[in-house]
Amino acid sequence: MSRVRILGVDPGSRFTGFGVIENEAGRSRLIAAGRLDVREGTMADRLLGVLNGLADVIREYQPQESAVEETFVNRVNAASALVLGQARGAAICACAQAGLPVSEYAAAQVKLAIAGNGRADKEQVAHMVRILLNTREALAADASDALAVALTHAHVRITRLRTGDALKRAWG
Amino acid sequence: MSRVRILGVDPGSRFTGFGVIENEAGRSRLIAAGRLDVREGTMADRLLGVLNGLADVIREYQPQESAVEETFVNRVNAASALVLGQARGAAICACAQAGLPVSEYAAAQVKLAIAGNGRADKEQVAHMVRILLNTREALAADASDALAVALTHAHVRITRLRTGDALKRAWG
Image (cartoon, rainbow over all chains, first blue to last red; front, side, top):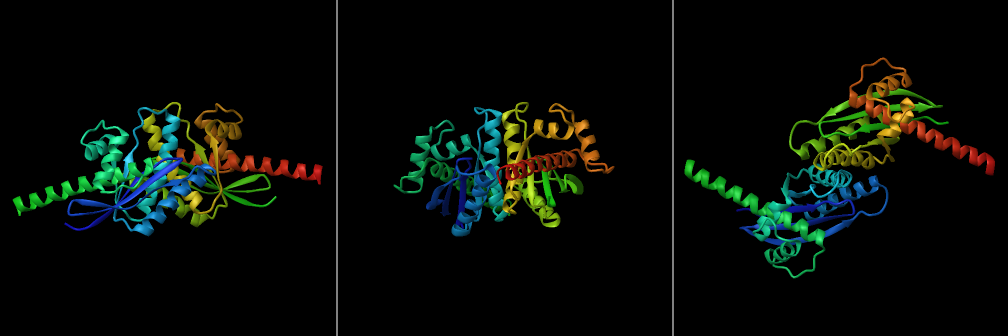
């Protein structure tokens, strides 16, 4: 199974988390993680900060695929959802503009894939992210969430590839 | 008073309206208007369609400033607001990436500036857009809304310039 670099993004209008992992033979390692601070300036400045900041990350770490957390909006009002959506739009544009396929995962999917429980709390997920990446690095919450969605994508795509291989074997 | 080209945008996840006007000495004329059809493909394809489509419009018609309608979200649920926000994020990114200042106007501000009434209906606004631009062209609703926000910006910036001039005269 080939090596793949995955960019995970946790978009936000104040901080946008990112994490790059490399997955090979079912194991993932941490390449880079951090967060873009886009609290300053007009809304246009801040969205451009997300777009350009992620473009820089993609240029530097050369991921081949990307994964973005689907925002869970049931708990927020429409005005907050709109602001969140704008940051998400900028993040998806950065990935798509760089030619990366973009996969979206719901928060519950991420929790299930990482912690084995769709209702796991943030600390459990953060803990499992460090274990799965075999790192003791202190990670900002946004960076850890971004790595969680990257790891989810690594997990899902391998399952998909394995299913494809099994079907090929079965059906020639 | 110098000549200025303004791009107005009415972002949407299915259709994104755009309109370019040229304003000189308080009068505006229609340069171009239309809508981007971004109904096809994944969400990433569609957002990239908004980003690249508006980049093409900007390259072709060379506006110096841009104006985007602020979405009125009180009537929609959080999930719809998120999708709308994503399209809006892509539209604002296109303008900011091209170096255009981006101004935002609430729907009520647009209605007030164009039809003299913050509660004017869509037909009244569309009618006034045609009168203000002295055009009989049939315009798609999204294109007409985009022109309305461009005209609002033309109106607001002239008021701002005139106030600036008056202050300069008064205070030297």
